[in-house]
Length: 59
Image 1: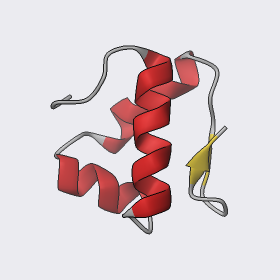
Image 2: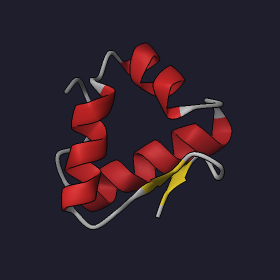
Image 3: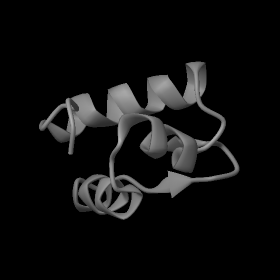
Image 4: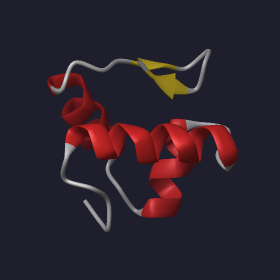
């Protein structure tokens, strides 16, 4: 992954902020940041967070 935090809490915070403020979908965020969507989801799932597309946020 590219220029994103390694710490899961910092990653969660950054991803949710970008989803809230700039991107309409996780797919769009991953495309713009050149990150693999499955890897990002897996990393945050392993930290105990799940993506909710209807909210466009991880919780």
